[in-house]
Image 1 (cartoon, rainbow, N blue to C red):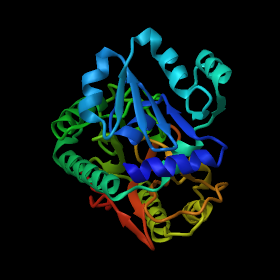
Image 2: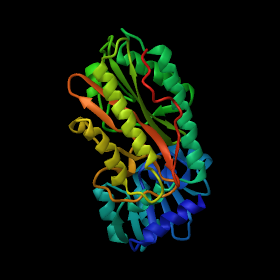
Image 3: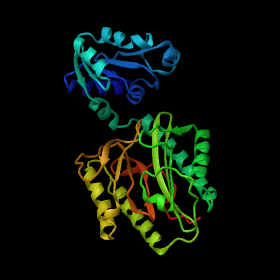
Length: 352
């Protein structure tokens, strides 16, 4: 935790700030080990202060690491913050205009998430171990799909089963804001929607079924997708699957410390284009993963950022034919001089 805090302060100093103030639960968790309703202040001395109400005081004391806990009423949290940060040069992730105005009257203030996101880019040993455990659980869930997915089953029924099993392993919904479902379970034409909402549609003979498992374990998100076949799969569907599989393998094989994100995207996209499906690959090749579902860096055609060792990213090319079918294959991995795949579940097309 000390190294994290020093990195955070170093990033804040680049913006001319000597103090960091976190409001988002993701940044609070990264700074303290506590996930809850509070405000966290990190001084350039590395002193870390949690301001919270009696509602969260006990958990903050027992779950945070090397923090001073200040109890305040909910309606007085901001006043407590202002008194502690008076005359400081503050960088904050706060989105509340009124709080920002109040801070600005007492301190030099910069509103930026850059110090937080830049610090979180490189994962430490504990974070990577947690992500590996999470990936192993997701692999187990994919293995359960082999015996569970069947013709006549609905997308909702499969989601219910998988979420029940996930919670037995202490994995939970990520709270991703842009979907109302915890998972993406999409069969047949629904699979042509990359972020399809789960429906009551029943799986049919000949369907490709996209199962995207994005789940949180001990604060960290693992993200992987497999596409299964049901019954009699068309020749075209198999060909599309093989194209996506090969595209992903090219991307993974090109991941290493120092390569630009755009180069990885390019090699995946070039292979799909060469088989005349380029216009059906409608999203970036991947993204960073960690405390958030989507973190920097984005593995896209325009991102010239170079990967560094111990970044964690996804590689997930896909082909989506509107009204017909979709295929996506996704793995989370750790960047090294090559890369370490966190998921071991097969990427061969399993026809159930």
